[in-house]
Image (cartoon, rainbow, N blue to C red; front, side, top):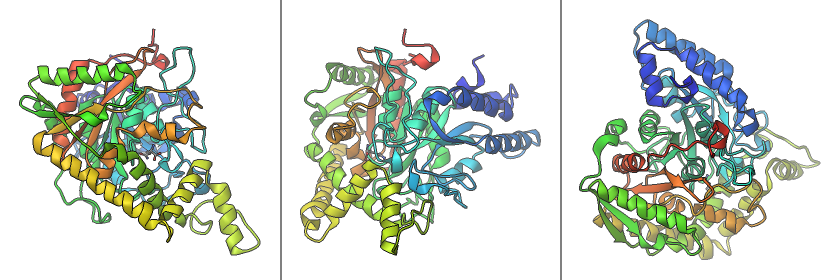
Amino acid sequence: MSKLNELTIAQAADGLDKGEFSAVDLAEASLAAAEAAKGLNAFITLTPEVARDRAAASDARRAKNGALGPLDGVPVAVKDLFCTEGVPTTAASHILDGFTPTYESTVGRNLIDAGAVMIGKTNLDEFAMGSSNMTSYYGPVKNPWTGPGGEDLVPGGSSGGSATAVAARICAGSLGTDTGGSIRQPASLCGIVGMKPTYGRCSRWGIVAFASSLDQAGPFARTVEDAAILLGAMAGHDPKDSTSAPHDVPDFRAAVQGGVKGLKVGIPREYTMDGMPAEIQTLWDRGADWLKSQGAEIKEVSLPHTKYALPAYYIVAPAEASSNLARYDGVRYGLRVDGDTLDDMYANTRGEGFGAEVRRRVLIGTYVLSAGYYDAYYVKAQKVRTRILEDFTKAFDDVDVLLTPTAPNAAFAIGAKMDDPIAMYLNDVFTVPANLAGLPGISVPAGLDKDGLPLGLQLVGRPFDEETVLRAAQAIEDAAGFDALPKYLGGQG
Ligand code: GLN
């Protein structure tokens, strides 16, 4: 049998049911793996006490033949953007120093109710702003995959710690958030599965807000089935979030096995990008062939406004961020840096508390919302957003799901692209449109590039049709048979 921390969620749940090991055994294995992986810097806070308590409680429920949840006894890691009752929550920012929430996010609560065992809070880009985990106040996360010259690579971002925790087999599942690609892009760069559900599928209540009209929580896992199990536990209507959808949660796990026979798969022409490595195009073509050979019909579609998605995102997201981050004023949360006047205290606190990328976003956001520029930038970007949604709506008249690459590149070296924000922002060129349109998307590991680094393929579906997305993702997973291991686990020959 593999080591307990190397089991998938489905395997761990099955082994618990059969009494092969206990939840405490699983938690200890994950905690030990987390300790051994300290050098990857995937966690900001480990929570061994919480893990041991919840694991023991799960074992006790099982011993008494009590009601069990779908994740009962399964260890998970939680992005440190989710408020956790009694456990520090930092958003990887200095400004939240000392902030310990007295409440649990709704998604976190749903996981607790499903029996999950939190082992810790994972590292991320500060306030989830980034594509490489380089903007964290707590330092960069290392991808378990290593570059061809042995160099350390970024795991992607912003949910880099959550992706690394799963890719390094510390735990089988973790929580992320995705505002413009922060689940799907790190999943692609770390060789695992990551899913952004439809906007409104998971409650945003108790998640530190970045851009409220784009943020969505979602799962990381090593298999599509595991992602489906996690999503099923996370999702559901929440009266505390007015944008949470009043929809029933389907049986996502059952949907995974649906197959793709007769499914119409769209290939958006505009996603062929200049300068994209040839191997990504090749992998994308192969992905289409895989689906076709399993009975899907492949059709080219057009999403003509794709090229405006990234510019529109980098107006809308900073605008919302500048407004959301106004609450960090040295009075209500975390850090306070005193000054001679109240205004000085605000300025000192925000100047010292926020890192450079967050300050850049607040400045851009304030600028595009200011009286003289509101119509020129913000209103224009909102109009573009509507066009992008219309493109998708039209495409989904003809096809059931779209297949694209997840990211235009594999993992890159720690420190690369840091002096070129535009190059950094390009990481999200294929993921951002689904956020602007609120659509569900998933990244599935599909192959390796010439340097032996993982590449993902993305599937995007109709609103609230995660089931079709999962079916198609399972078909890609089956055909790709991705089983390569990162250097950290003895792979990469
Ligand atoms: N990389 C994008 C950004 O920096 C997306 C981040 C995210 O999805 N949280 O805004």
